[in-house]
Length: 276
Ligand code: A2P
Image 1 (cartoon, protein in one colour):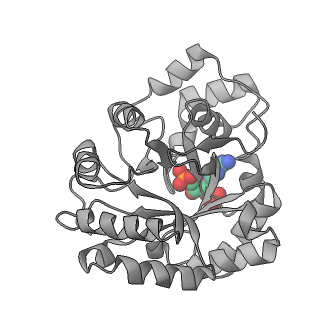
Image 2 (cartoon, rainbow, N blue to C red; image 1 turned 45 degrees about the vertical axis):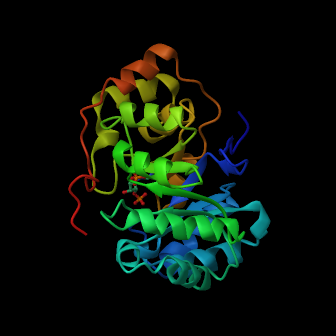
């Protein structure tokens, strides 16, 4: 696997498997610097959202890096209030304006807002057919939400971006997505901000065995399962470390030991009960 391994999505779009996540990365210099640092260190994929309120700084970091737009993969997401207000088209244009771009690579429905996400999907399909976005997908969708889209839509989502880490392996949902050519993107892959996943004894022990950090072990565990990983850091050393995962291979036994840590434990909101 070369640095920046890629996955080909169901519409032929190629996505770099490691992306920088910027949830809870404050707007302004922190985001500008994190994005610029990531791009200078070989990242080619940035994952933001309207509700992170840092799209302007993401755009600025990209421009400062000097990396040509065509070499990058940029994702943003349609927020719940805009889904409820049926403002898909307008919200998309507002995101583009903040990013300072004329297209994004991937546009996602952020959460499966009841009685509204179906119509939003039609709006995303329209943007896709108009060539204003290279691919469309969903986030935080459960099987029943995906079934609705697959039944009523004409475009199959390219990805489902879900919370996923060794304590929440999401195997049944992943199996369903794979059976329908929907790739998985992992948010909070390291257990999220404020979590203590990386102190887990098994992960610490296995990481030491490979001469890697627990974060690198977990990222590698996702890569070996063909999952797109969106780790977040605002520190240069960690941003670099999180992409330095191509010089070791986790054995099948150790892959299974990591997956066996699953407790179906969420650190973020539950798609079945969220109230925002
Ligand atoms: P920071 O931004 O201060 O580096 P996730 O990717 O699951 O959302 O987790 C991100 C959290 O893990 C953030 O709090 C981030 O903090 C921290 N983090 C990111 N990379 C590493 C790393 N290599 N080692 C330890 N902590 C990390």
